[in-house]
Image (cartoon, rainbow over all chains, first blue to last red; front, side, top):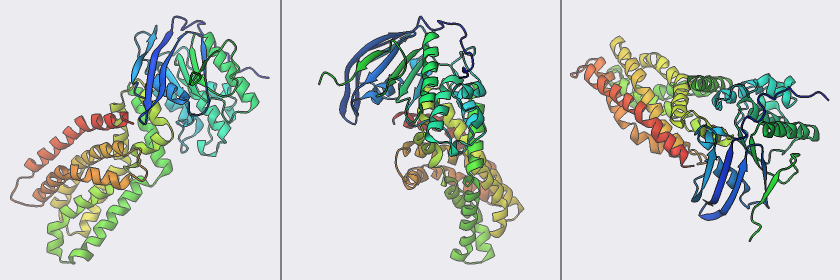
Length: 220
Length: 221
């Protein structure tokens, strides 16, 4: 099995990173979806958010990304040079942000430039990122003709074309085959080795050892 | 910052070119509206020459609303809008760049087509120049004002009509001064420059204010 592109620049790049969530409450549609959620993560750590459907896993990720207003509580990021959490965060959800009219490489080039958060040494070129997800042959194909699993792999490649220390992943393994899962698990381990933080909402095993778990909705 | 905006602009142009339709459909709609005017008001050349600038402006206004409802909706549906929020580039600038790209692909073809269609409405040379100049300056304001409506209706299914209802009243000042500038160029009592300068001022005000309003609406999602 060919290893993906060697991509281990300065190890421990973000080890000083701290993500602290305190008593977070989020309301959606007039209903309190998250109540008093607290956790703290340091660089290199992975948090897996579990719970049954509708318990607020996606809401938590969107609130962390700053895409949903927070009713009360605080999300704080330390050690990223005063940068706001939203500009240091990759958010991956069901909607993959890919344009069907553009080719795979064009989509990745655009997001690479647009989501650039100023870590040039850690970013991969679109070609390298596609190699890492095993899609080199599809670079010039239109996204419209890709299968669901291939689209998901392009979306995962987006996480690598612009380096951001925090990954918020909503069901990242959806539609992936076993081989792609293993490749992505390796990418996640690499990200943690660089000192990045991963928060993933998933029902499936992520393939990351030493991941902490946050069960939502367990108290009720 | 500028490389982000350039890549967004190129992306928008590529999408518009590959999907097609927005520019050419607008021009065809424009042509249809101008063509049916003589059927409605009669073929009297004097009458057509008199109402020509107004008809061209109304037609261009309606044609410029075509496709504008998709300005942010497509990005909201495929998740791109969420990612725009996460960029270091302010949402206001993204709105501005998307408006600029929309103007190049959908607004500019209308300005180019206007003199040709003006010939069908008995417009002489001076009047044609007046229509081109007023549309060139005024139509960007239509796109910018329209972006507020597009942002406000981004989650509304089939929001195109609602967007038109929201936007059309706001475009009345542009219409008034656009048409009076075009009429003044065709030979009127008013000097061309006074309505034209106000039209320029409206466009500049739209340029300064509308991206903030549209971005504020997008943040409320």
